[in-house]
Length: 461
Ligand code: ADP
Ligand code: F6P
Image 1 (spheres, rainbow, N blue to C red):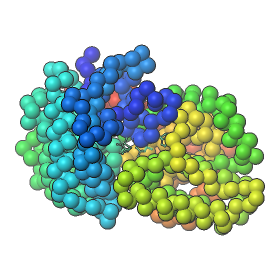
Image 2 (cartoon, rainbow, N blue to C red):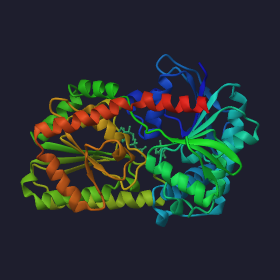
Image 3 (spheres, rainbow, N blue to C red):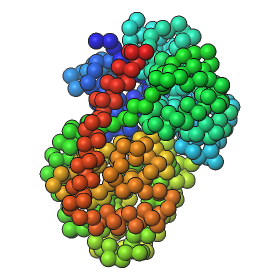
């Protein structure tokens, strides 16, 4: 079997994952992928050091995690310019259609290029001739060019976990040509949805002057490659098993007792402005306003662990949410009922699965999201005899597949509030019918299908 070499900015803290929970779709999906296929995972150690260790840290495979991890440190300047700067204040907002939040400094792009080049130079000596190299996400868009310049002839694939925005939006990035011409050194580029692929095709034909042939063959910047859709997913049976077990746990009992028979609505997201959390809080407020019969009868639990805390836009969204949650609770709480429970902590995956199972409604309402694995996890966690209802943003990649969810436009928070009311009052028959269809879709396109189809396409090129 050919070895798979995964390269991503974030390498999950493998040994802690089972207990603490890896937050972030990429880490969760790659862990599942690597557990099924021996390989190597290369990326940032998560450490920021004035004088980084010269050679990468190598962790040998273990029984639980049969793959090697190789990690490198970042200096404070690299962390600031590459991760907080170019990746998360420039690329992230543009990829999520928030050009208004882009904070451009050309120095950050130079740092981003330097870090990509440094990752590549540390990776190259570890490569074997027939390794399949699989690069992940927007942090590493310059790496394909650097790998080729270093003489690497291996197959190279790249998967973008975020949306690819419309060509006009992408072109607001001052470095858009450098980024895409680097990506064109790959053999295969993967996107989450057909919409992302269409936007990329549009970029290639109209901005890059390239060509898109049949069979997803592309030509641009003097290179030939393929680009295809591979919707990322989860292991639904494993998640369902965890949810079943966890629903009998201590924590699940505590949760049930604390609810005292009230219906639970849940949201689980990194604290990110792309997740539409203020709009979600407003839709909950609308529900309580417009349908007062829900007061005292419904509790909304929003779990939102802090993310990218040094980036100013994340500090702003955090204080906005603190204000909104305080206002809603101040307005509606009673001595024995708090409508909104707002928690900024990660949960162990098993606990999370149990919480999802116990929730009558899930609110997955990002303003933009590459896929959103929580939507799929919520469906997998449900009790088939009494499933809950998924309220899903049309702007999540998952909405392309999960058509039997209640699909909403999160910017219309009143309409989302109406969908919440519909979800809370939906008959058991309708809930079961929608859930079966959703679960079937997730079973057919699970994490194994995602990995296998990407690897097969990469080999086949
Ligand atoms: P993103 O990649 O933008 O973070 P996704 O929804 O695709 O969004 O993936 C998030 C992943 O992180 C999911 O697997 C989810 O279960 C996990 N996660 C998010 N928040 C928490 C939390 N508070 N505790 C545990 N896991 C979490
Ligand atoms: O695609 C979403 C993503 O950026 C992943 O790359 C990453 O795992 C996740 O969000 C968490 O973000 P960060 O690595 O910045 O904590």
